[in-house]
View (cartoon, one colour):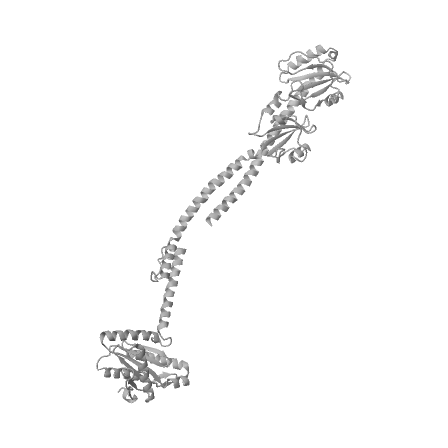
Length: 542
């Protein structure tokens, strides 16, 4: 039970703390990612607006007369670009037909102007939009000369009447220019990063992962959170990217270009603390459960040691190796109370066993020894008589008139009479003698160590029995008198118990036939002459 509770507690802690910590850390990381995405989006927006404003100033201040003088126009553009070293832009001016009038590259160390004849921008969407009078950020692409990612920006150059006279194009290199370069080189954690996405172009404009720069965004259905971002959602969430990696992402808008920034961090990295916490729980809770089980085992062993000792002692008593004795009560607690209850039960068991033993060897009505106990004592008496060369007398007594009394007054009166006769006969014998009831109205008196003269001793003993039984019995409202016929068998120990009982019974039967109320002594051996019968009147005491 202790192990089960410990395991359940560990599992509950593991599940609950894991869920709580995952939710809490996800919320915290999402908030951090959102703050980072918004910060990056503001910087990207500032980056774009700074370059747009620079190009707007150039377009507003460019002398229209220089449009016909490409060399001077190139010098004019170079001078002003060099005043903004942080904005390394490739600049170009095209007329309204798309013909390139002048172009300044952004190659490192490039100075002056380069005029490229024959070039045209007539088919580019950004040029067409600027020629229509709208400042435009074009589709990011790859510079065919430097092979670096570039971001074209086009603005109209208007004359005094507001008519578009030419188009100014500024093209920063994303990978080397300002903040975007730093963004491309930065990472969130070990494997997280930032994405800059153009939803209208379905293109990754910039990324911490160089392999993703200017690559198409995944199709719909691959990344649910990306699909929501493409539809206009801004916020944070947990999603699975196109590579099958679960990550926590936050999305913020870049208003000037209609783009959005994604700050992303793999869940496994963001929630690494959860894994460490899980390991901590399993490691230390396992140690705690083990220590708890050891402690519980020691406490239980200490608590139940008296019970185990008592059980061992009770088992020995059950096998008969120890007598039935009360168990020691060590402490006054539940185990002590259980031991005390067992001792009380043992005491009652002893009482019941004693009662059963008494019932097995005594008559249930009179309390006198029964036939079984009489036989045992008779065997012992015969053996002792043979050893000590003494005499043993067995008197077989049968009540006279008991049947008539029992039939007239009922069995309850008869039982009362039998108990009174038993009490009287017990009063006339010595402590060493035995009075037993064989059943019905038959009693046996076993007398040991009969002294000489034997005839006188037997006569006196028989007279005492006859006199004791013959006294009036008070039953109900009247007195009743019973008699007794006594048959006596005498032995020096050489006879068997069965022979002695049969001889005494025969002698008593002879008394019954001779008139009752007297006694007779059986011959010493079976087959001898019939026993002499003493008449009743001769046996009545003076």
